[in-house]
Image 1 (cartoon, rainbow, N blue to C red):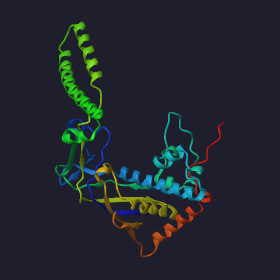
Image 2: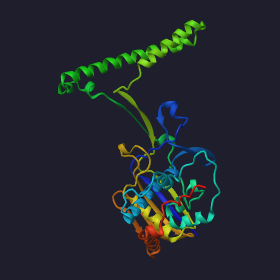
Image 3: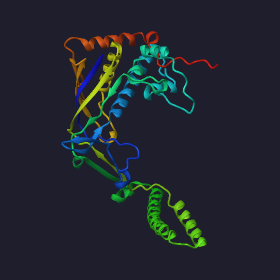
Image 4: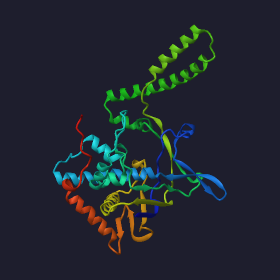
Amino acid sequence: MRTDFRGELTTESPFVTSRPKHPLDKKNGLKHLPRLPVFEGESIVEKVFVPGSGIKGKLRRVAEEMLREVFVTATGDDRPFDLDTRYLLRIGGTKGQEKDSPVDMIEVSNLRAKNPLLSVFGAMGLHMPGKLAVGHAMAGVSLDDIGVTAGARHDDFTRDVSLLGTLPPAEIQKWKAIKIATAERSEAKRMLRDLKKKVVTVSDPEEKAALNEEIRIIDDNIKGVSIQQPLDGYESIPQGVVMPHRMMLLNATPAEHGFFVAVLERFAGLPMLGAKFAHGCGLFTFHWKVMVDRKEVATIDIDLDHGFRLTDPDGVVAGWLAAWNDLAARATEALIASPPQKKAG
């Protein structure tokens, strides 16, 4: 059985994300969007995209929060999970240096039946593949249309010196000392650049050692945080871009289907992805057709203003949700958060 969630997502505010150590970051100081090569016409071009891993990761964290609340309600314990369990639920577990132990497939099968989160999203720590596949959302915009945002942090007391009149005299002196130190650091940095250029041209060992010591001393003295400094810029997919999107559930049970739909409903409370939340970035609207073995059975729409909207003419999704709610109502009996710990020896 295959269930497709096929539709589109639309940026309602700029979307920002980045991959670690992107080769372009050092070139111009921007945090770059990830890129993928795609065929366009008869040539290959690079396109930016919303990574499926980011969407899945967001939904997984929402799922963990939802499952934790189920156990809080069932047990009355507001901290029902230990650290290892939370790592297992949120990221699939952690992997250390120890050798892998044989997998008990019967135990894995039992765990799937009692933990829809791990069954749907998977757990690398348990060698349990997930039943959910989340595709990338490719943005059909050229690299020339990507938004670029940059800025700087300014010292308000430099921009408006009248603010100094609101400080006690001792604090005014402290501000003056900071400004002097900042100016001295700027001059020291200039000297440091010159010395580093000079030291590579010196062949005499004693002179080179003396220059390196001078470099070390200056370097130690200029360490500190400047109040006024440029901030890293970033690329963004512009607002209003519509991107096709697809997710799939393979051989999921009715309760697992219901669990996943309940996760989407919870996510609809704040449908945001990516970074720069403080800048209002990452808002989306979503529309999916729900198709079971290629037959459309429902539609799901998500946006910030209206939340979660389900059109379910034949009650298929309602049946899934009922199966999940039945499990949730019997949490301590029918659900477990993590596999039981094996006794040593």
